[in-house]
Length: 506
Ligand code: FAD
Ligand code: DLZ
Image 1 (cartoon, rainbow, N blue to C red):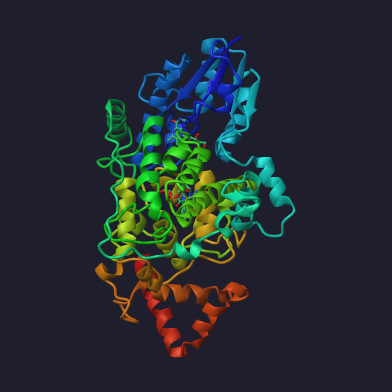
Image 2: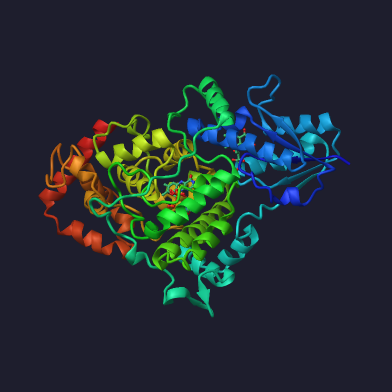
């Protein structure tokens, strides 16, 4: 019997559940580069190169391990352009009697998979993706009995369930989290280790040429493409992080520094999301580093991102369903400003985050949340438009992880399902966390008028616009006290600065 085993572009793991459940003798692995996936949003050029190059390398790995692989290149004549069309053709071509696939991560592709049996005329077995640490059912059961679905509760439950960083049922170090130690600004003159280099090999160079030729208008540049595209490269990225940057991962996790695109961040999301690294092995590598002297605030901080945030946002995505991306609890309706595509805002923190997004397809978490996301929140940008932008511009972007981070965490568009209050901050926060303000054309010292920091007056304007809703939230009482202490003339000045800036932005 011949079985077709379709493997999607983010399922590049040799231990994939579908590969474990068939024999090499019966299986034909199908991998297809298709225009439909490359174009459902116009992905950053680096993301296209990353996915196609990693797919081509993975196909070669499978072949050397004895699998038969039917690989469909995007630029080959007769490419059918869609996953379903390629599957149906492969079933016919190989006279297959069955299809065994791992469930896709995104609702859009799950819906496609649900129609595969009818389209192909053979039974299709869909297996749960067990590369996540928490199954969809386990998350649903955890969520089922709760009034609130907070990440911190989920994370503690996961620590207890897995025993990671636990001794005798108690968290290692006597605390669940060390966040208070993790909010330092980078001391002047401190050296940040260079990120590892992954020079494009012949396969990647060929894909770069193809992407430049076929997707010339997509966002982003390719000159600085530097992502691992193989499991060996991804393992090197993991060990380099654990060896050189984990030590300060916690300390400077929230820092924003001029000329430092990556700081002490891991640069592992592209590899984990593609399947080149298993989340559990990343956690294990960090925990093992404690023996070698890695500080607990760093290791716990890193573990929380993967065991906590990554699993939690995926659970929320599955639980809330395809309509989640349409949520707009604050009624924000501003069109996405052109500065998100062109930069040149004059706000140094924004432009630095924009420039590296364009050139590296990467910005670290605080740039995404407290600069690019925060600005959109304060300016009242339509959350769906922002969601689509975030899905386009990052090499690690997949809807299951991007949407809860954008719609929920960053825009509060789910009305507080994911976060207990909006992640809104003014210029003083950005100044405290880094050194962009010193190079900015705006000034925090100037309190009003065209030279004042837009983040500052937009912050107060945002609070004023949403006072009826947000001032009911106990966690917002202190900031509303601050707003109410301003004299009416000062409040009017802030609102007028915001109105002037927002109308020029449009
Ligand atoms: P580090 O900061 O070093 O963190 C280590 C790892 O933890 C990451 O590799 C990632 O696997 C995981 N992680 C950390 N934070 C999160 C989080 N909030 N959600 C899920 N996983 C997390 N992450 C994506 O993978 N894809 C996205 O499309 C994406 N979009 C985001 C959009 C916004 C508005 C925000 C605020 C965050 C987004 N994130 C996304 C989460 C996070 O910013 C990235 O995972 C991280 O910046 C990737 O860089 P890194 O590997 O250096 O991560
Ligand atoms: C992201 C992506 C891209 C750009 N191209 C392909 C492709 O051509 N073929 C493929 O199988 N997968 C691709 N992917 C990854 C899919 O979009 C991903 O599997 C779905 O979003 C489900 O998570």
